[in-house]
Length: 299
Image (cartoon, rainbow, N blue to C red; front, top):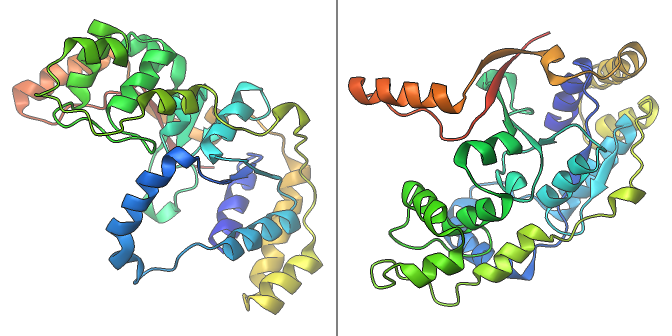
């Protein structure tokens, strides 16, 4: 029901969503996944675990709603980035900042957050980020690896500020390793930074040239049979949702994000420095270190 209503809400705003499902994780990610699994093992006993069946049911729901989806061969964020770069979609909407490391030109966060959370939508432009931090995409990837990624651990003692300073000074991880005190900053055993970099530079993604995205009218009868007959949801709510999908599919055209959400503010390099200076004087928290725009949800 969460996917059903959040998708309808996007469509009502004139947005044409495309969902991307994860494929198999890269082999290099298995170690990190194992550690996460150990850390969460106890907590997961209290939670509902997402299974392959859940994913298949979500795909069936989207098909019945007339919403296209893509099955990524590997990381979903990598395929999202490829779709944006190819001009197939406007932006990648995800909470995972790895989408920027994979090279998506535009990232949106909190787009599908529930209305109750009242989270502003954040818009990140990769070219502005690189310009603001004074790095190339390759250097940005090395920065992300230094700070720790799904593919390898971080280096103890190197935090965000230190990592940025090191990249700016030495340009690459290899040069950093040749110039820092490895006793002070011990590199984890089997630290596969080269392999991690390659996964970001050349990820396994879907053949975007062969992707054809089609939005169709919902199959109301089949939706009712699935969501009410099999899942026991209210028939009135499902039929009303289907009618909203049909109405907005024929009654609106897709526009820019600014048309659907009110811009509440943006952060530039100069503005951020000004804020940081004021914050330091007043002992306030610093502003975010990444240029972004925020949007308030509205009609």
